Structures are given as C-alpha cells and as structure tokens.
Image (cartoon, rainbow, N blue to C red; front, side, top):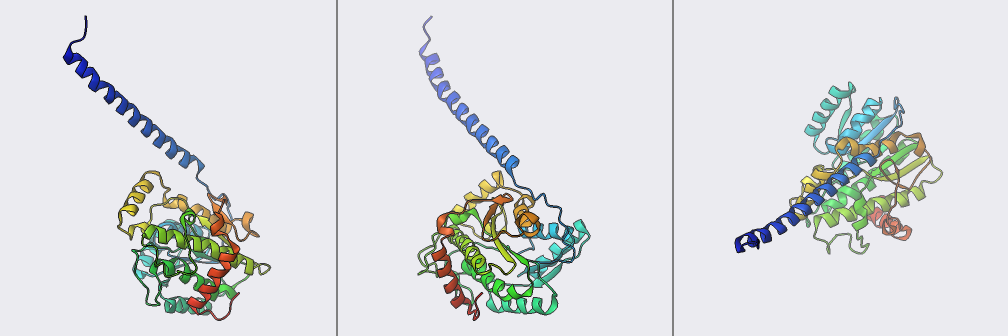
Length: 329
C-alpha cells in the first residue's frame, strides 16, 4: 500500500532528526576520546628527589599551579617562599599547605607590577636567606587592554615579563649552582612581539597580549641561558598545560569566557598542571639542561619566533632599559 501524504511528511521530518542525533553522538564520542587521550598522556614528575636544605622561591603561589607547586616542594622538605602580592591569600595558602604536608612555608610580599616592590623583595631575600636553589617565575595575569602600572608599562607585560626580568637579575648572585624555571605557555605560538611597540599599542585583545608575554618568557629563557653558560645556573621554560586558573578569571571578555569553558571540559587540574614545573625544579634529568622548552615533563617544540636569538637579544636590551638594570649578566 502506498504511504499516505501524512506518513510521507512524518518520514521526511524523522530523517533529518536521525541525522542530527547521529552527528551529535559523533561529536560527543570525539570529545570523550580527546578527553581520554589528554588524561592518558599527561606528564608526571617521577623523580623522588628530597629537597631538604634547599630554598625555593615561587612567585604567584597563593593559588592555582603555583600553590600546588609549593605544596609538592614543601612535601619534599624544601624551604618554600610564597612570593605573592595578596598576603591574606598567601597566608591562607600557607595554612592549607601545612594541613596537607605538615610543613611550614614562608610568605613574603611581592607585587610584580611595581619595580619598587620587586627591589624590596629581592633585598629582603638577600638579607634573610643563606642560599637560593630554585627560582620559579610562575606568576602571571591577563588584564584588559589599556591599563598601565605606576611604572608606566602595560600591566600584563610588566606582570608576566618585566617584573620577573628584574627579579631574576636581582637574585642571580644569591646561589650557584641553581635553577630558574619560567612558567610559560603554548600561547607563545600566538605571540606577535613587536620590539618597536612594547607598549602593546596595536593589540587590544587581552588573550593576544597574554600570548605575546608568553613569547617574551621564552625569548628571555633563550637569552638568559646563553648568558649563563658555564655559571652553574640553568634556566628552562615550560608549558603547564591547559589549566583553568585565576589568570583568565581576571578577564571578562567573550573570547576568554569561551576559552574558560574549553578548559573546564578538557583542561588539566592544578596538580597535573604543576608536574612539569616540579620536574624542572627537582629532576636529575635536567640538571645540566638549559634554554629549553618543556611540556608534560619532556622537551617540547618552541616556535621559531619564540626562540629567535636576534629578537631575544633585542628584547633583553629593551628590558634592561625599562627596568633600569645597570649591570647585565
């Protein structure tokens, strides 16, 4: 019997419905496979090195990856200094770390958006600490475009690069051998650093500004490593992974909101995100390695525009002028 007009119409509507359901199921399956792959391939620091007698400074360590890094290094018996702007949050973090490790950590004031604060912090460290074995430049932020620090520089650029550049210089002579760990990002891939526009005047996307400062982190690593050859001090940069943290939470634009939703679904947790930082701070495998880029506790590929030696030297020279550092490495 031939189908009625009503039956034909219903069948015509059901076919697209099955197609849609099939496509949705395929998308969900792909998403689950991507999530599973991410979980199975996440790097883990396998080193069991004890850090007794060693001093570690971690910037931005009152929350997120920095806090988890501090927790792990405290568990390994290091003397850990939480270098943070917000001392209330730092004390809360210190209390939480003590509850989970039984180890006390030290809180010290550091605002990377103030060169005066950076110098004051460095002076206190030099006066109070006998040694410095590991400096972890972890702090980072992503701010709306157009904001300047009291020193006159774009906020994200000073917090993520200039502040750490100055801090590293001021503390370099404290102890050798030692390690410097720069927490960068795969975002360096999207970095578009213009040496002639370090005011970031052409960029108005917060995420692009952030990525460009991550390019600066890698360029800084390359040039500092070159200058430190033979000193016993190593410096390496790492991508912690896609981790939801307070960095992106400070920005409320649409692109960042969408990025955060992806991180919620596929990103690492903060413990997983801290693994590569811890690896570079403690592992015997990287004791003599310097100037490299790591991800998931192994060497990774850094894009050419983030490792260009000419641009690295240019950024170094401009950073010296901006921070008024008189003696270069």
